[in-house]
Image 1 (cartoon, helix red, strand yellow):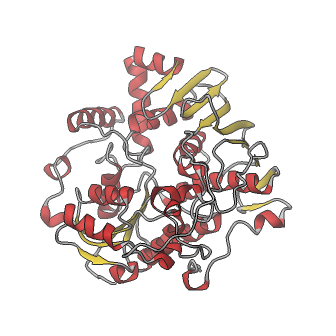
Image 2: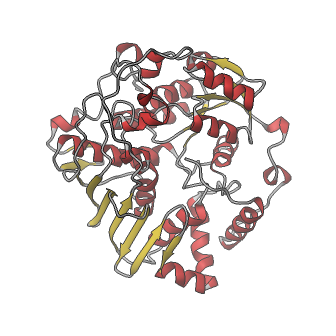
Length: 440
């Protein structure tokens, strides 16, 4: 999901000031201040050219040259080439795109159930990867991706743009929590939008001309084509995604876990029993109204909600105060104190810069952060390990909802405590010809 971008002037002012506060050199060369020069522009292939897929491909084209586009719906690739990437070669099969040795990086904007297979194949082909969120369909897929990135030595960035594009809001929130400005955190509320669609059953229809429906289904079970299963609405089918818990949970649960500093860990217990699944055979099967209660280390209570009334965003409550953050604002007594005390705010913004671990040249530009990371051997702000853990919390929520019981999670082992049935749902049955690769 795209966010309102910083203007270049505001970005330069904020980033330069924050870096100066951190006490480190911050010199913008002509290369970093402007678009990357032609002879430094990597060649990029873009896989999945629906609305969001085309959006991230266009953002990538600000830093590299998109020379290949791929989609199982031929018209999507043709439209992207005609409107945006005139010199791009068109593919239907992503594997043929990956065979091009000159392509250095790929963007993946497919439905969720294809992310892992394509990302692993791209990493094994020696490409750097930018992949949309939610990162995976299952927790086991995330473990495979973490192993694949480590094995390949390549860079992978995940499209949780709140980390990069809106660091002034979300990075500041994280630094405020980690810096102890709210005291000991007692409770976190993650409020998700009420955007889930309800309805069905939907009748099967003739597959549209130009769509390879069997390949679109991929690892998922065979199903008749209907338009409600594809494009944006695939999100509301458990077969291809995880509903609102993963769609927006991948953003806001990530902010919560980032702030709680559990990026290599996760919750202790998960209770989604207050959430009811829809019961319409042949219809959307992920819930619109969601309530999931988590317990995190340090006795932190976290509640994921998609319930009215609700102000979408993340609310942190500590023994010294509260703070709310979303894509439009950050509020609370601690924020007011920072705004009233320039030296205190400078300290917090220096802590924000530190969150980028040295990859500060493209603060305010999530895609630019990815290119900076792989071109110069830097850390990507949405690295695969942290994003695997963030979306794992979302998957755990869905598993508790579907099993209709409270679950206990061993984050170190990444398995449930005394629950073999739940462990069996860390992966899903897959069609043989589209099986997700196993990384040794």
